[in-house]
Image 1: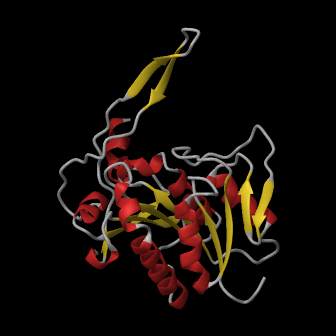
Image 2: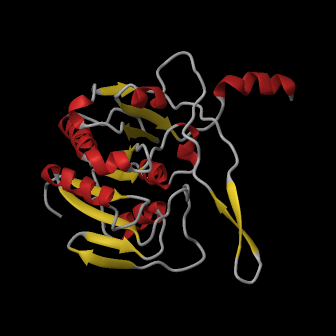
Amino acid sequence: MSERKQILVTNDDGYDSKGLIALAEALKPLGDVTVVAPTTEKSACGHSLTLTRPLRFIEIDEHFYKLDDGTPTDCVFLSLTKLFTGDKKPDIVISGINIGANMGEDITYSGTASAAMEAVLQGIPGIAVSQVYMNSGESIEKYGYTLAQQSIAALVQKIFEGNYPLPERKFLNINIPPIPAASCKGFKSTRLGNKHYGFHAEVHYNPRGLEYYWIGLPRLEWMETTGHTTDFEAVKEGYVSVTPVQLDMTSHDDIKALEKWL
């Protein structure tokens, strides 16, 4: 390993995702980038580890690997075991650029966010970055990943020149608005919004008449909120949303009430 900063990059869209390639390119001026990503898309796999079958690193290029049928969490976990040996660990783990939003409670499904979760569990700063898109991805085709690249590079440089802004077991969840870079209003510190969830699953039949289901796309609709700006509101207003996320999911405000109820 060189004395340059060590950056581990992963995602949940697969090793050949344009968002992943754009992220790696944006980070190369800031340090030595190692990419370890799933072989296939693992969207909505959550913070899952593969425990029932073996996994293999497959080298695609120098410092670029796909993990055969692994999850984003597997990628981080095994990279720290296989690729970063001894006391030397990555200085930061960046997950993304995810194709689509990871806002509100959706981060509990997100493989992108879960890779950042795994990083901070292992004592390494973690960032999850997602590109919100509109009109079935037309906004990405029109604007590309320029704003996402500029934003993540600026934040990582700020961390390397100073410090990571969060304590242990907390990560940054970033969502990029679907607008040209020149139109962005800057960064905004946000909290997770509350999403409207519905049920959408299409029923189909195979040629033998057997019934199967295909879970549909979620709605991008959010509840009206009061208080600090939410991630959804910031993105809607043209800001890059930066949300601090903690792994402690305890509802601390309800502990005393629960004690009384018990």
